[in-house]
Image (cartoon, rainbow, N blue to C red; front, top):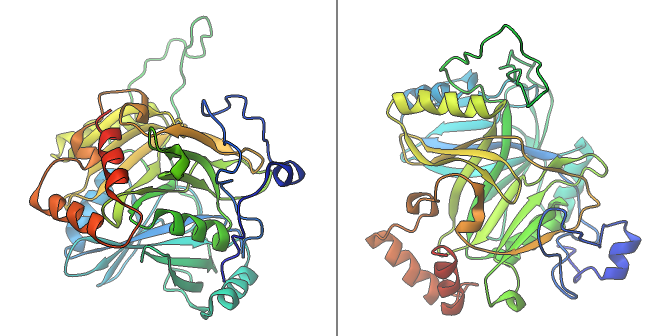
Length: 388
């Protein structure tokens, strides 16, 4: 019962109060007439935020060691589950369940109101259940068109705020706010504040995109298209939650078309650049592998630093991201590897996932053979973009 009844016209956008004059606000290009508007006319609900991401891992002790080194605090620990949190008040932001292999098993979004769960259950033919979350709550369990498990939750209790890292007092030019005091940020784990966003790869990009817009009320901040193939529509979208005039993260969920259907990375906010850098030094000293960083993104503007956990899953420290309210229309930009950052080291093949391997070749062959959105022209366009 999805309600995406066609693209929003420019007239409808104007009536809805969407900013249609792009004015180079966050991308060089806005939408052309008839292109995807990046939002649904009448979504079932509007989720408020990403609550947590879920993983399975065979060794919870090893998972907890990395989690503390990366900057998480432990919210709860049982024989078969580890709940991790940041210092901000709210829910736990990562759940690690005991399993046979290390893998991503889904994401949970926070419902703005308890009644949203009833509305969502009616629209999808599901039921509202008790949530397996510290403090209790209710949940609707779904699957998106890519097959990823998606929970929408309303938590009964919030975890209290914990002490966090304070931003350093900085001197700028002639503005001297720090006098007779040195800067000595300790080399320690970056203290995670909260979960910021999740990135997924899918072979069912358009269907999945419309599902999140229609059902969960998310809206697009930026689209990427393939050079020379813009008329075929976007291949990547950065989605944010719609909280009206309240400015929220540039993206809570990002998805891109690709040969696989899998987790790419999840991102966690820390205080500032020094927290990213000092925390990165701490991780490097303990033998963990940096995937890419430190730099600053273009779409979203975040300062970033990407790492691999002991099971090769990618996680990101970020700070200073863009915040958009509901009245900003999507930007459009060509996809390219060089367009992923304003500054920083060159993007690594390891980060892009373009290192050749027998498994990757089999995945590519299976993707172009199966019935999905990735035909040979799209695949060649993606390979070109990742080498441009």
